[in-house]
Image (cartoon, one colour):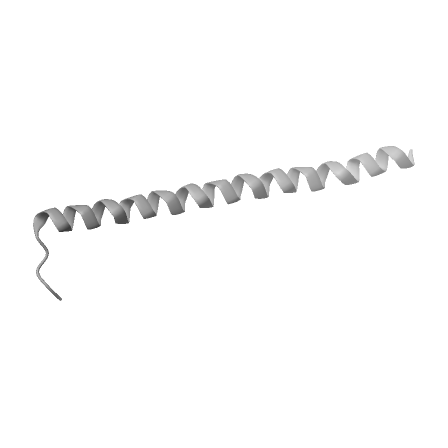
Length: 53
């Protein structure tokens, strides 16, 4: 393990925080897609019930 200069340390920290932000953005996106699909799956049975009436 070599000594990190301050510049290297800051660069590593920034890339780590960028990764974290990207990961959070992805989980947000997955959550949005999931809630969209759950809404769609709730709408479909309602449409089927309407067809039965």
